[in-house]
Length: 507
Image (cartoon, rainbow, N blue to C red; front, side, top):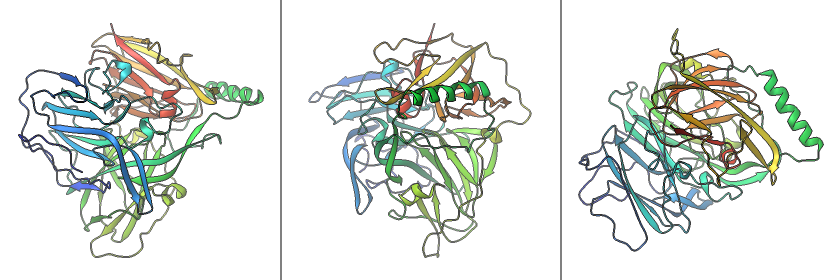
C-alpha cells in the first residue's frame, strides 16, 4: 500500500509493498521541495475536522493491519499505512518536509523520529512534551530533516505488561536522509528491517551474551550486581519477567517465504540494516562474504572495516557494503539457529543460480566499536562529567525487574529532569552497568561520541545508541546543542517501561 501523497507533489516511489518485501533499488529522491513558511508547524485535529490548507508531503496512518509473514503465518498488528515495515521515507538533508500522522486506533499514539535533531515537541516522545496524536485524529508536523544517513521512525508509548502495544507491534519504518557525500562506492541499496512477532513472557532468566569486545568487567559492579541477585533469590523471589518471541522476520517475511535478494557477481550492495526489535539483540552473517561497515546509526565511521558478522542492539543501524563475489544461493541470517529457523533470515540468490539456500556458521567473532574508530585520535576534555550507575531490582515491580539510574526509577507521574545542561557545553556520560544485561543506551535529539569502552580509550565513533555490556563501564561525550527536554533511556522496551529512563533539561 503506497503512502498517501498530495495531488501537487510526487516525491517518493516506495520500494516496499504491503507484504513487506525487500526494499531495494536505485537512490530515490524528492522531486520537489516545500517552500519554507515557518521553522516548525504543529497542528492537531480531531476526527471529522478539516485539515489545514497546506499540502502534506507524506501521510502516515497508524492502524491495525495484516502482515503475511508466511502463507500459514498471517498476523494482525498495528502498522504504518497497512504494511510492515512502514513506508521508506527518503528525505533531503536540510530540506523542510510536512508530514500528516493519522491515528486510526482507539488510543493516543506517538511517532518518534529516531536519530534526528528535532525540537522536543516534534521528536515524538511524551516525556519531552510532544503532544499525542489523538485517537481517531491527526497531527501535522513540519521539520527540517537531519543529520544525513540512516534513521528510522517508530512508536514511543509505554507498553508495560501489554505485549500488543509499543514496540512489540509493527510500528517501524526506515528513514534515509540523503547525505551531501555518499559513504562509499556501491551499485545499489537494500534496506532491511529486523523484527520479531508474537511476543510472550517467560521467567527463565537472561541468556548470556559475550559477543562484545573489549570484554573486561568492573569487579565492584559485578560483585554488587551478583550479591543483589543472590539476596533476591534467597528471599524466594523468582527471576523477573523477560520477553521471548515465536516468529522472526526480515522486512515482514520469514526466511524462505519472501522474494530473495537477487544479485550479480561483482555487484557492490550497500545494505542499510535496522534492528526494529522491542527487546532483542540481533546478529547477521552471510556465508562466504564480509561486510564493510561504512556507517553506524547513520553516521559515517572514521575507519571503514570489514567484518564477518554484524551485531545490532535494539534500535541500532548499520550501513555496510557487501561485494558479491561468492556465487550461489545463501542465507543471510542470524547466528542463533533457533531464531533463524523461526524466520530471522533472507535468501541471497546470485543470477543464474538455483537450489536450496545454504547456511554455514561463521567462526566466533567479537563485536568491537573501537574497530571503526579514529586512529591515534584524542577527544577534547569535557566541560562536565555526569556519573550514571544502572542497577536492576529483580522482580521488584509486580514480577517485572525494576531498573534505576543512580538509585531512581523513572516515574511517568512525576517526570522530573534528573540532569541539567547548559547550551554549548561538552558533557561526558560515565556509565556504570551494575547488572549482567547488555543495555542499548539511547540519547534523544543528540548524537554522542564513544570515548572509552571497558577502560580502553577510543574516538571517532558517533552514535545515538550503543550497547553497554554486563558489568561494564562506558563513556560517551555529547555537546548540548539542541535545547529542550531530552530523554535518555535503555532502548529495551521492557527496561525503559520499568524505570530505565531519565530526562535532561537545559538551564
